[in-house]
Image (cartoon, rainbow, N blue to C red; front, side, top):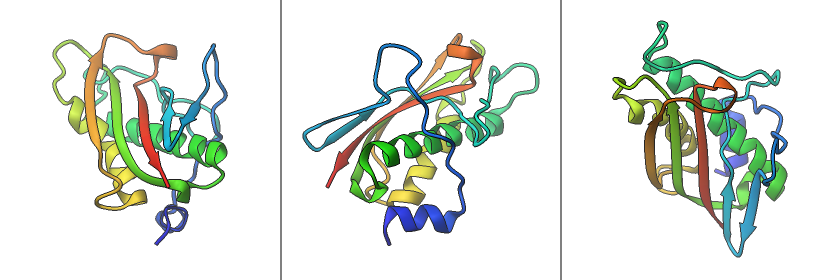
Length: 154
C-alpha cells in the first residue's frame, strides 16, 4: 500500500505545511536525499503545542503527542515539496529535540511519537531509520518538541 493511502487510512489530519520563519528552506532535495528543517508540533488550526516535559504536569504522553504532530508537519512539508509522499523510499534519520527539565530522562519515549508515525506511514522497514533523541533547556516559541528528518527518495 502506498504511503498516501496509509496516511489516509490512518485518518490523520495534516497541518498546513509550515513556511520558513527565518533564512532557511523547510525542505531541500539533493540527488535522491531530502532533508527537512526542524519542524514544531503544528496543529491543523495553525496553533502549536507548547510546554516543558517534566514540569507543570506535562508528561511523556504529552510529549509523545507533540512529537507525532511534528511528524505530521514534516509529512505536510514533504507532500508540498515532493508532490506526493509516495516519492519517499525510506526514512534515513530522525533527530528529535525535547524541551524538558534537566532531570527528565524519557526523551526516546517522547520521540517515539514521530518514529511510530513514520513506521505506520512508510512501513515496518522503510519507516524506521537511525535516530537521535535529546533534551533541550528550551526550544523556539516555547514548543515542546522539534524534529528534523532525512529521507531517501525513489
